[in-house]
Image (cartoon, rainbow, N blue to C red; front, side):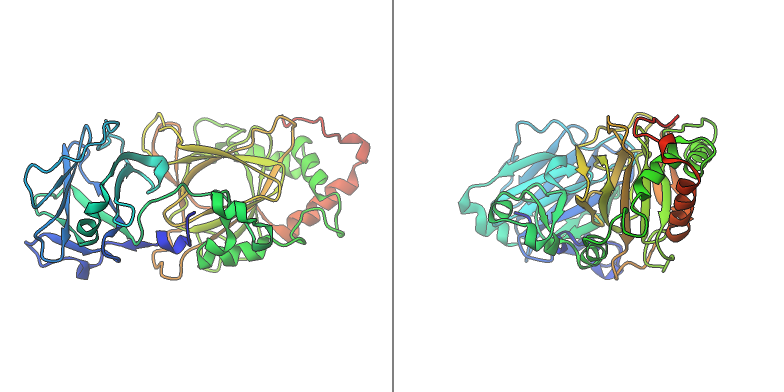
Length: 420
């Protein structure tokens, strides 16, 4: 079972004090001896090799790691000819796809090493090797990553404290909803295991009174559905107006959704931190990422399909998702600064039910960049910026939906309406 998401907390590798003097190899200390994940980019996709070393304290032993165009090669440093430690299923190394990045996981406690492309997780793994137990002390002796001067194409990105072990649950559950079997099987992400920032957001939107159809307006959901399918009403008109939002030259009414914001932009998130998003049947987002922000998403009505990608690939033909999950009413999922960042949302409901979600975004307290955009992939394979703006604030939107609903006889709206 995965433990607290703090274990995946990214240490940025752009600080000068992490490196040796100019002209010497770059040295990056592991946060815990014998374990961690090193993430890096290859700044020249034509380069046939990215190499680095994992060294012990006196640099007399360790591992030499090479990412080639064909595979991942790992050898022991102290004994020339020891290795390579071969994964017979590994037939992939450096990618020619723009936007790709890489990771290598060292796990002395389980005597395992993994390597992958994109988000550091088992689903993106391309290489694995298990050592015998007698090699545990050798692996525990490793204390640093060292990048040789000739490895100019390798750009360090992040260092994670702990190794990659199990797959990571996507659905969050609170303490009172978790069973012993849930913990043993790793079926759900306990709310307590989210980052502190994500726990804060979860507590704000997971309560029993955080609902659409309340005593003030019990027909709120029906009113939204009515406004979507009825020409001239606000939702219907706004969706048409947004048909060129992600492609100015080729309108697509299905590549639209509505963003209803709760509160103000407080400078702690990309855009306003709390956003109600409305997804009519068949509507979808472009493939996009979330600027390294934490996020918590709860489904308030209907269901949403989420396709997860290893990275935002700048290609006309997108790479395949490594997972696709369906989240139903009242289920909560999550995004951390390094996991579940790149996705596409699609309402595939066959019962003509609009999906409505509440999306919550916040940066970690340590984040000083605060990139105010989501990068997305257009149909030509270009990575473009989208500013997460507001279509209307929640209070005004609810008032308008109530007004539209009360102006029309209820008999004019049925659940069989299909948008456009």
